[in-house]
Amino acid sequence: MSGKSEEVIFSSEEPRSVQEIADFLILAGQKLKEQGFFNLTQGDRQIEVRPDGSTKLELKYEIKGETKHQFEIELEWKPGVGGQGGKVDIV
Image (cartoon, rainbow, N blue to C red):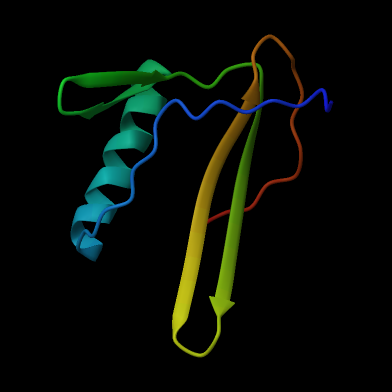
């Protein structure tokens, strides 16, 4: 048995316009910058996202076949563990 376990706390995939996605990312970024966390809500569910400790930003751009492009943004952290890596910027 592997020592790794994964529990999905929240999952969502829904169609949104590019503007709606941009607004969502801007709001999440503003909340992280100002408060250090943001809340995701869906119906009556609310999940707090509060990165701390050793925080990592993962970016991945893929082209699948000839017609599908995918860009993923992932935040990962280990609470209570320090450290930082290299930096990618948006220009």
